[in-house]
Image (cartoon, rainbow over all chains, first blue to last red; front, side, top):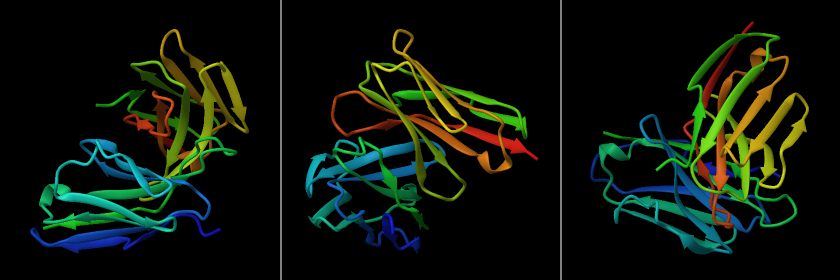
Length: 115
Length: 111
């Protein structure tokens, strides 16, 4: 398996622009997580899905952030409009609810820079 | 807010030495995991320990869990330069699959 795939790997955009980050989880995994990592705040859980349904979005910082999972093999995290303080590395991770027991597999991340 | 906090924040040792890092958490847990992150990469799962377990081993890794003290430790024996990375603990407090990550320990192993 190719592992969790994220695109783009790097994104540089201007303040006010819309940003869409994409994630393809490992085939067969039924949980998908979006995290944000910064030096100041560490690794923060933004939202997670189970079987394509959002379970907990309490970590989404504000209404400018939205996430969707239209099917089991694809998820997006959208920021509209983007702000400089959104600059961070965004990780997607997936896991299987049984068998392997909670282990999360992380993608390589998307480094977002908002100028 | 952070559930887990690692200690020390940074650690520098010589190759061949053992490295110990600690994680303290605030509320009762079901499971605790340790992850490694190499610079510029995603996190990689190392080991999971359940709340009813006290110690687990995996290769050169040894993890202990003391639920009475709400703490865990990760020991890397005979460290190598390739072990240079940040190490995070992650705790699941609610019986769901939501894990909260700690602040991390930056380990540097000098060749």
